[in-house]
Length: 301
Image (cartoon, rainbow, N blue to C red; front, side, top):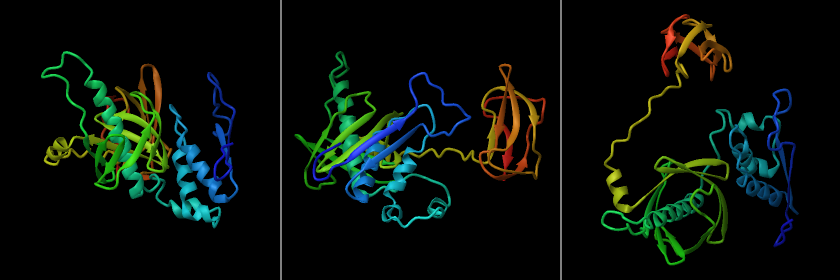
């Protein structure tokens, strides 16, 4: 229980343990989260806060989706039916929406994390031209297009020239779960390095965040963005091997999960399945042919 303006109770029931096996023959639920509050709104908000603190690695999970459901106005109102998910997410779940306050808070936290790594890097001795000072200003860009300028002034942070706010966080390099206070708001965020950027997960979505000094940010505007190719219409060989079976031909209609081909590699057969419903446009290779990694096996319309 937690005392304060409201009494909140949070409980997690689970049946898993280190070394245990989650069998394919049982319900895939590995844990159940229960919260109680004096009002429906308080209990729901406790769910969101608790879901932010889950760090599940190695398997797929629905933590972000559950958080998004808890935040949905229709769910909070109780005006739901068994058709709620189909009605509200007809194109599938793409993450909970991001509001301006959350982008600003994530930007402040991301800048603090970057500054922490900069501070540690500055302690390395023997650097050419001496240690690089920790920047007081950072430009933070989120994958949704939002951009914020973050300035540190003593123990406070200023985002986009707004009023200074207290920023407290328990972050140390390598830490994944970060609890922070930005102004009067509590944030719990999962943090992971992603190349030159960071992946920050909270409130039902994962955001790719890039932190730069103002000079680097200005120069980066002139860089040509490399757009990754759209591979959603192709079934690619996941590894070098032998195509032992091809179950489709041009014009065939396939459904999500349907077996499409079998690749033999390292004396094992790997069944490749369609990721979504589609019509086969072409099959560039045939059964019995050798495959290179990422070679196109089937092209869809």
